[in-house]
Length: 307
Image (cartoon, rainbow, N blue to C red; front, side):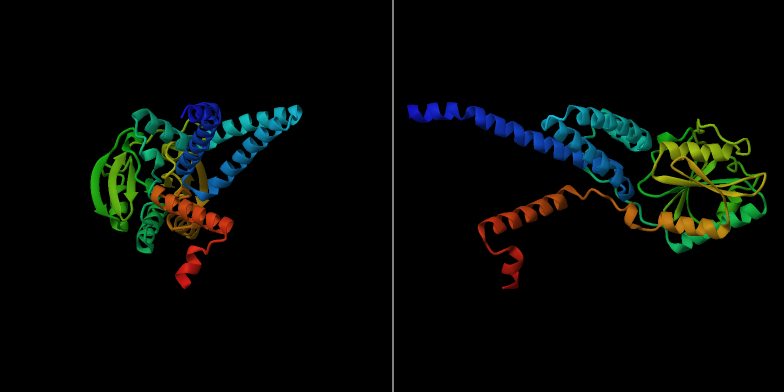
């Protein structure tokens, strides 16, 4: 018994290093999963992968004793971190808000994508914008792309409507003599949620040709990444579309329809990049069993199922 106790004390340092190494890997995996949940889009995933490769290369150069290469890579990592913080400011803002509120469970839950808008809804929006542009009636539409918008991002939430999307209703809302024509209208799925919404203006330096509606469209899409805005100019009747703070103008009706169909349809680059924890656990267990079976020469699960 005494010899076993001495042996256990001798091996304690090795066990402790193994435990710390396991915890280190676990926390890195958890942090990586949280980053995938935050970015939530495949097109941004390549940028994150490049950043991770730079960090691994920096750590490897440090282990290999290459001080000059390690110095350059460290500076690149810092610069890329700042650039990502600017490019993904809305995602990091949501992450910090959830962290500050103590919503730790939501940090590991992928954001659910909204049901894509049907062709009939897009046609109603396009037809309404066409008539508004033709008559030079100013309009501002907010279209959710995935997940509901937090109304606290609005300066004034507006008036609740909860009505079906129709071109007649959209045109009526933005008639100059109505009480709600000055604000924005929020569309969620196939419903008009609210109108008369006052949006925060963009702080960017914009052209003098752009009015308040254009700056508001740029401002809300800078703050919220899961929406786009369609703007009709009251002075010229030109059509614009704002996404992630960038204004695309002028657009033809055909180009607007193609853009809306591309943005509001289920596409590969807008699928969630982080699976649910249960599915992720099943994937890891399946891969682990396959690896163990391969190492020990055991028949795989698939081959057993065929038999």
